[in-house]
Image (cartoon, rainbow, N blue to C red; front, side, top):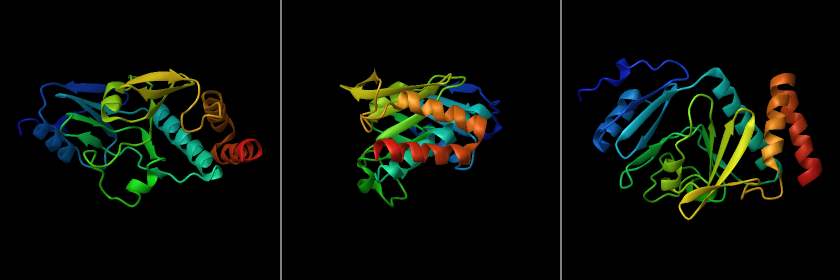
Length: 213
């Protein structure tokens, strides 16, 4: 193809847009970018975004994912974490790489699979996006049918739940309806940055056990 993607330099925290990219070009660009890269992509009906993250973004992403894993473990809920896996649907002309994502209710359906095909497999039950310099492509998640989307921005957690093809903001998660995570996650995220990851995860685990197990 004419476009040599590897020659495009995207500075940390920046996004570039490529328009009129057909599906074959999109697939070729993904292959050209490769698996081991710092950039993430979003594809929406011919428009391709390529983004690179800042350290602030990566720290928040990892810590939120770690807190969620502790929560799921202590509640004894099976889950399958697929990180920033590329999810795409050729028929819908949609593609996205979340900051993190989890199969929870549908964990058994994809457990052990090396490839996910959204034409036959369900989308993740939960996707996580950290918004530092750019907004999440919520319309792509909605079109792919991701039931719940967490967006973290400026120290606040927003929980969006898919209803009739569009996201509605809620104070509680549909997966954890009895836990006010919009307050708890930011609180322990801030603690981790002050007191260290390991100490905070132990404290969070104890908090969950004492209050919700």
